[in-house]
Every structure is written in structure tokens, then in C-alpha cells.
Image (cartoon, rainbow, N blue to C red; front, side):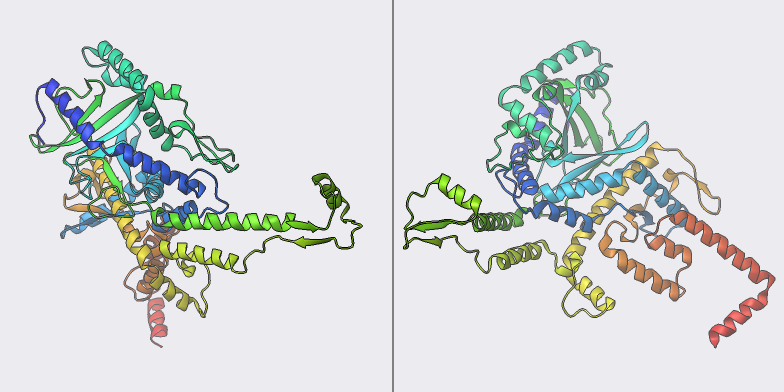
Length: 553
């Protein structure tokens, strides 16, 4: 994309790009609001369902697809390299894993997987601060692209991030400009105009939607909160922002544009009505030839960037489950209260009936008087139907009983159960691999940022000193041993044990492959034990001979 050199023409192009990239943002935000109401309440009108299976399902699916408990990254090379680089790569992978854990980037990615399951997609941005690596999660309705029919961000000509900043933050960003006072005044005036009327409702909804739970009604009425402002009557935690706070925030845009003239991404920062913060020499605020955004999308849809929500195919089943439970509650309530017909009674009033119920008996002089119980009976198949609905939901979601920790009929051993687990989980494994690749992309961006910004010297176990930027360029970051997904944990444990028994790997490699606490301490102890063992054999060679003879016998 070519960018004009004239500032007025450049601002006009920026405004056009923002409008084009956010063309579907309002529709996506409205759809996300509906999905959020369904996910947290189990209904479409905000009336809390008796039994909501949607949000627990998202939580369960997210736990299967990604877990930050033992996330490890590994540096590998596309071609053969000098053996000394392999030791450096191993140390670099360990350092990268610890830096990502230190900055809670893994926790944010885990939250991004859950949000992406709920809404279809989420974006994680990695950036640099005076404290080192940092990241933030961006909801997709606050992010726009030039072409939504492309499935990756790398193919986009332009990406636009919309965020909210305070007046003080704006001043820090523009204080260096020659006409900062005038720009600041116009930005504040424009912000007040934008947070009035219909635009205020839309703007307010975007703030609320990203940080609160939907309105949950327990009295049978539906939610009527304006602009997505919500209030929970069940004491659930909510982040409610008042419109006066929104009026004090300013819409700030950051554009990442593939600049044909520079052959790299160009970052532009813009505040309405016409304040271009990034003036002067154009540059990429991230790393050369890279952008800072990672798309998280467990449910990929071909030719649509934003994916599909995990709960979309479950909504009708959840609605049926909610209706049946309401029917059961209604009939069961009538079973307790009883619907009685008093035939041949004289003068039955509400007061008389209440006295009869309080005393526990009814007296009537007429010999033909009788009482008939008209209370409807609960259908015999009522709870069986509920089980079928729940079974349908698990089937659509891809969960069988054994994946939920429940026993299967006919399972007689742990090996049999493990085999069934493997044959029942291919759908989840495929999606876990997809999420793992997206996590690897995040690791690559974090490593590129560390290489560009840090000049810290690292040491291999042999004492070889190096910088991250000195590693060969043909490297890439991968998730080590599928440590991002619990689905693969048992497989890798058994594989590590088998390779150790075959003497293909040593004990230190086993510690790297399996999930263990205090891994570094255990590896240090293992090295010490091996060193003591070698010293003992050197002093007593006959021990080695005896050991071999015993093994051969």
C-alpha cells in the first residue's frame, strides 16, 4: 500500500482506512453481545436458566485445548547448524519460556483461547515496556482489517486497533508536537461530541462488553439495560462503567500498514478529528518485517477471519434444555401445591381453603361431596429426555463420556481406557494442534522482540556466552513437547519412559519431556548424581564390570 507524503492527504487516507476496516465492527459487537448473554445466562433474554451448559462447556473446552501450567518453548532450526548453536538454542528456549511466564503472557493467551471460543476470535498483542515484555488481549470488535476473507493477519494490507486512552495519556503522546495545545483541545472537544446520543450507546457497549458479565434476571423479566450497561441481581462480579467515565476517554487508533515504499510495516497513531501523532520519519513500532498481533482462533472458518463461536451450534439445544427444565419445575411445583376440584362442597373460599390446609383436614356435611386431584403428572420420560438433551450437547461439542472422566461400559483395564481415550479425542487433538501453532506464533513474536530489545548475555552449560540476536536467522519457535495441551500429556509421559528404557535419551531429557515441578532443581541434582556415579566408577572399575555381568545374566 502506498502512503501519501502530504499530511492532509495522509489523514484523509487514514480516516478512509479506519472506516473500511471497521465496516463490520458494529455487527460483530452486537453478535458478541448476544453470544455473551447466552453464554453467561443460558438464555437469549437475560433470564437465567436453571441449568446453563454453555459457559461451563467453554471453560472445559478451553482447558482441554490450552493450559499454561507447564508451557515451554523450544528454539529449533530449519537447516543443519553448528552443534554449539544447539546448546545456545536450548538455553534461549528456557529463557523465552521464563520471560513469557514472568510477564503473564501465557495466562493472557489462555484467557484469549476462552474468549475466542466464546466469540470466534481474539487478538493478542506483544509489545515492549520499560519492564520488558508485555502483552494485552484485544477483542475482535475493537480490531479491524482490510480483508476479512483472508484467514491470517500476515496477509492483511492494513490492520487497525481501536483503544481507549485518558486525556493525560493523550497529552503524553502529543506533547512533543509543535501545536500540542491546539491538538489537545480539538481532541477533547471531538471526544465529547462522540460520546453523546447514539454513538455514546455504541461506544459504551464496547467498553462494557469487554469487561463485564451480562445482565442476569431472576424474576422472569428480560434485560432492558441501555447500551449494554448491565446489573447482576445474583451478586456476580461485574465491571460497570458509568457514561461519565466513557465521556472522559478518547478513541485512539493504531494502524499497522504494509508500506510498499519502505518494504516493511509502518505504524501510524491517530486521534479524531485529524490528529496524526506519528509525524516525521515513518517506522515499524514493533520489529522489522513483523507485526505485533497474534490471531487466536480455535474454530477456524475458511475465508472468514473472525471464526465461529463454540456455542453457536449449542444454542438451540440449550434453549430446549431451558424450556424442559421450566416445564419440570412448573409441574413439580403443582405436585407440591396440588390442583384440587371440590365437588359437592358449599361455600369454598380462599379463606376456608387456607384454614383446611392449616388444620390438615376438610369437613363437609353433604354426603355427595368429594375431592378430585387434577394435578398433572410429570411425564415418565421427563428426566430421560433431559439426559438425551445433555447427551446431544456433548455429542455436538465433541465430548464423549470417557473424555469427561466418566467410565465406559466394558472398560477392564487402564490400557483399554487409554486406547478409548485416544480414539475418542481426535477432534480435540486437531483443534489443540491449531491452538498450539497460534501459541508458537506468539512465541516467535516474543522472541523477535527480546532479540531486538535486549542485549543480555546468556551462558550455556559449557560456559559459552551469546546474545539472542547472535543465533542463526533460520530459527523458529515451537511449543516444546506439546506442553500447551493436557490432551498430549500422558502420551509424552509414556513416550519418555519408553525412550529411557531403550537408552535413547538420558534422565535429564526425561525431565524436560514430562510435566514436573522444580524441573531445574531436579536436573541439577541429576547432573550431580551422574557426576558422583562416574567418579565412583573411575575409582572402582570393577563395579562397571559386575553391573554388566549381572545385566547379561
